[in-house]
Length: 273
Image 1 (cartoon, rainbow, N blue to C red):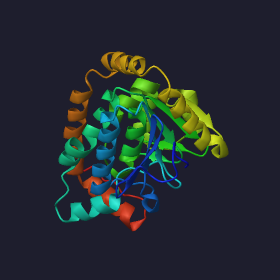
Image 2: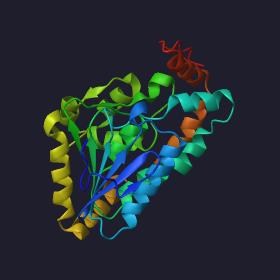
Image 3: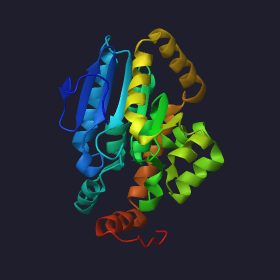
């Protein structure tokens, strides 16, 4: 997707590009060959980019989007499978050290952040999108709490971010059935803010970011503080709670089967163990 600003990134991390266009910045997730799945380097680069734009007083609005056909497909399960087989997968540490600073960093950034969902947003990719203040999507995009499909539970704040937008019933449906929600349905449910035709999406997302970048930045920051106090004042505790449960799930037989089935490209045979 086209970014706000120049064609060449202002900074190029290994897996993330950072563009600048006036007071608007675009963070482009850039592992298109892996549908922008999260590995260790990706999480490190994304956190660095988020902190860079948060600390830059010249940036007054941020757009987060994906390169290629996806926003983000979630965690890189090939990496996870390798670590799990080697007995080196520490889910709790990954969540608390890599993912949580990103989610809270976006929520507490004193400037508006827009998720420009250009394709699938799944797992932690969905959590990232919903941590943003506004979520806009291309018609072809979809949203998926994919965790249950490999025997895990929602993390990255999604156990809070999803129900705060769509309510308990739809959050339970998304979390327990693990089925994709189209952009149109996501709009109907209130999960996201806007849906635009694919051929208009990049330009309209950039226009929205530019509009916010020219707006009353301190007002936006104050609104974020109000919403955080109302809806997300217990976010740190919920993130910690999620990480503890996810550590339990990662030790289960169903998770081992789920990851193995993914790597072998077959349907998992869960035993409930």
